[in-house]
Length: 227
Image (cartoon, rainbow, N blue to C red; front, side, top):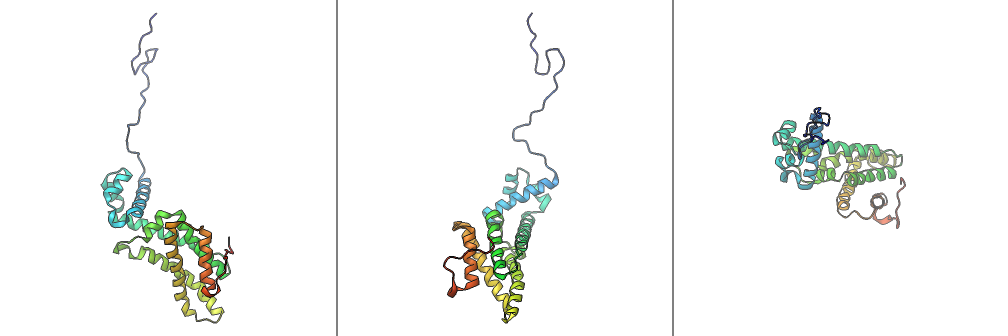
């Protein structure tokens, strides 16, 4: 007996075969509003890191996220709004990382922890660091790299102030020294981001060596106390 050929929607017994839906190629993934917002923030973060604020357009953000421009405007109101959210997150992430790292009791160890925390951030959150160090628009003047480092310096200032006072130095100079120390670590971090050598721990050890001992009392082979 010759078998009956079935059509695409019919089984051998003559029953209708359940329809199966095949996703169309290139179809847009449906996300919740919160998921879409996070995707756009991540996309903006990468583009701002690669190109800076001025060279990044809403069209590029939308194209890379595979959404229409109105979706980006709906979430952030424009490029400035997206940039402000990205920078605010990076500022909080860096400050939280440094604040959490400062646990030691000895001032030299605290300096080591601060240097390592910044270098850890540069290594693990490279795009975020690049966003902060790039030129930022006027509207985010309080959320650029200089302002972040200023906040970090204020934390270091409290540590140095107490140390200066206990040693008979003028505690009013703690602000000057904290700015100098944080600036030294930050600028070295920008250089290290490009060369990535020597090892992060070695960079931190030499920074602390210079800051703690001064040029006239440098150790030949400095090592970290905390690691």
